[in-house]
View 1 (cartoon, rainbow, N blue to C red):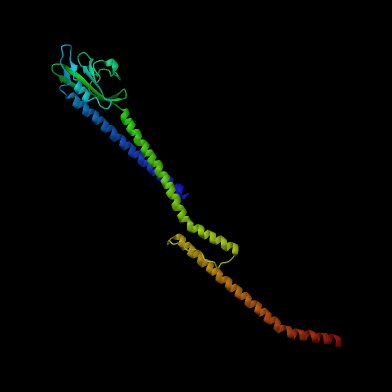
View 2 (spheres, rainbow, N blue to C red; view 1 turned 90 degrees about the horizontal axis):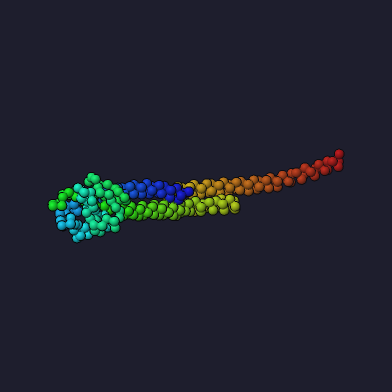
Length: 264
């Protein structure tokens, strides 16, 4: 019971601590992720070499797009005037690119199609006004948070198991002197010999005080038993002496009674 109570209390404390850590970590990771998306979107929007003017229309700079396409990022460049997609991180063919984000109506940060999306409005000469969309999948953050939650769960369960094992060890060690006292008490009950002494624990605690008290009680019972036996011995000696002293006059009285009965 002591070990189980200790393990349950440890589990509750660790679980509460794990919940707090998980919430704090999730908030920090998501904030950091959102800040990274906004930072990269701002950097991408500030790239003046993002588009180049071509006779057939503006064209994305492949080197710039490639530099910002790491970690499964999605990049879209839209023409504000025509609401068409100028290019993506894989080229100008939107049909091969998933997900197919709709042309943004307004700039800002949002979550769409499982991605954290940041849209920035840019005016590039001589191209004109464009919208730059930068998005990163939320699955990476969710994967990290799930791993953190799994590790916290393992920590809580492991801590509870360790607390249970430690509680069992401490409880058994603490109850060992009491078990020894119980064994000696049963032996005294069986033999009815109060002269036996109880073992004293090494530690000066309540168990040691109980052992000294019980040992003093046994010593008092042993002394009382000795006094009773001595009194009984003296009583038997007194009865024997009295019987011896009374035997002679009683014999004489009986003899006289027999003579009197014959004479009378």
